[in-house]
Length: 556
View 1 (cartoon, rainbow, N blue to C red):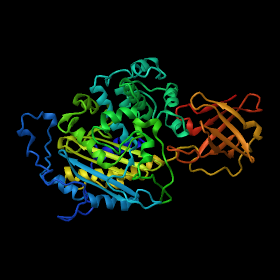
View 2: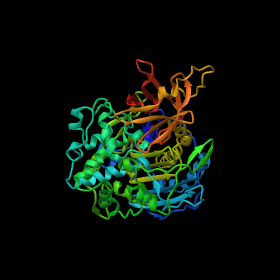
View 3: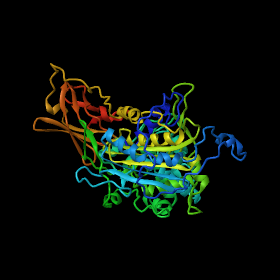
View 4: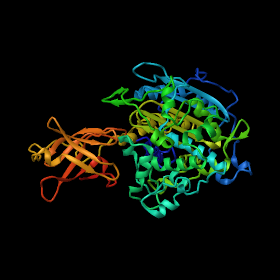
């Protein structure tokens, strides 16, 4: 679930005005404005960091018409919005209960704000500060796009280069797609791979090599026809780019981006995150209470969701993007290669009405246009097991905000960013964002199983003898599984470790199980089908693993 945040952001929230929509509701102030002169905690403050925008773009003939907006941002608007960030963050955290958060704002090459709130771990009570390292989840994709732009700038690969050129073992189900799919195709999620292809293999504990090899078994939608979000498609493209540079992914990110920008607390390695003393634990909300329950090793999908960082490092990266790849007055990332990553390559958010705005996706980046007509670049990150993040850039104003949190995705970072940008662009809050994002993110946790919300039959058909079900079942995608009996209870053993799922009899040959992992949402069905003799099961279909018809396991 590390990447559903941006999907909701584009598809659900876009039509309400964050990315841009024609159906914005009446503006309503949600939070009381901060008093004039109120104290603002920040790592560094620049009194002249908020310079005036020209009163009319039309007076500047050097500005192309498609870069103009008729909604100017007055002088002082950015600093006024920064002055309300403390209130916005504390109020939204109070409303949601998320344990910890940190935020930073950059404007015109300066860090205007950086601070932490709450605690990084409910068990220890240690406070969050601007140096606390968080898991970035899918915000990692945008960092990865910058790294690839650096490799492209070195002429070691191209965005439009086929992935197999430097990842020769890579294959998809259609040979034509295998031959032609490019780095940009996979970074923009237009390869035709199904939604979140490979994620359930990661949940089971398979490594990157196994998962990338298994992608060739996934059914494909039409090539370059629609936006379908995949962590491991992007990961394959990043692996190809790293191979072109002659090294591994984490190392090339260090070389091209993190070390030159002095992003000393940022890494694509889980081991580096675990070495940080000041790191945020992950938290989930269970029956209204927040708990520290899970850990996460996202190394298999590191380019797509495995980075970790703090808001100070992320602020440096945002400054680099806003400066078109220039750092300390010198080009660091090639501007053309970076700009190519920020082009709207595929429609990702269909308009809900003819008057509504569309959402687009570039390479690892949402590309949209807000209610003032300004370009916004952004991405959310989400781990259902306890992390939610977002960054948003307003390139025309040389402005960026990043928000990192240690709670499951319920819309907190997106809301903070939206409230802040409302104050910058409109001067007041345009929506009750925490309410709207909360409603949208609630859809992440809906269980669509045939058993969800149902009670066991009052008079179920009996199960067959255990010998009918016990045995080994083969599957090319998930590997072999075993059904065993322990203390008169059937168990499914699945995955390389393996995971052990007890089966609860439901009705006849239908059983219930409760998968675990990042994408699990509760009860699911396990259905045995008898062979012709009726003496043994011929197959077992695991509903949770059968989203792309790959969850049927055949008895040996």
